[in-house]
Image (spheres, one colour):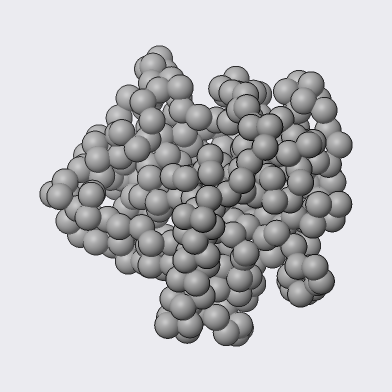
Length: 352
């Protein structure tokens, strides 16, 4: 009997070690996996993403920018430069470095883009992938995620390479697309957390346990607003507190809700164009026609919510926050708000 008991105990011990290992891997910092794990996770989630709405956008035969729009783009750029100097963010240092990680450069059209997730990123990955030689049929049927396909043709540049491109003559058309940080946060919550995206569900157990005092989880809802069976997801209040605590503890925030000013470091990149999702039709046409890619691409609007647009429901989610949470979010996104001239007054009246 002794040998049998020993084997049983050994098997139980191995099972316990495996369980603890898996539990630990789903711990508090698991939303920042290695790049290799990120690419694998993106591949796993791409099948669901392929069901996202893809809308064709018709370009005009010819397009001339208005004086008012040209002045608006110039004013945005001057404001960013002035605010960067005021905040002391225009000087590189050990703690303030250009983040070249998300830049894509198309040499043929001298077009340099810093991708901001949840700010028309899917639409412009489509455009850059078309410029890289992929066909529309390949992009629609591909099993790989758009970002993975793009990186096969646009390797991630170094800081030095981005600086060299920026200093070249003629200079590139360089741009980033911004979005109100609160709308971007709500959009990320609806798409990644509330809908139960497979990449993020391992975090849910940690959030439930740590923030149960903020109320129960909520019924899971798909991107079209329908209930996802009996599944549950963290509430918006729980999700926001999770982010705020990570920020306080000095943890790197996820790419879908990290401040845009950290992600693309505009104070060190000095983009020629600061487009906005709120004026993307005009801003996008300016980029497309100025760069000459209007003869190559057939623009698509991708990942637009098939349920109620985020701009129409943001108040509903932000009203779930305490006054302290709201104020902490303002502090978290203060540079985005200042640099890109976004206001929170429209949301403040619903903070409780």
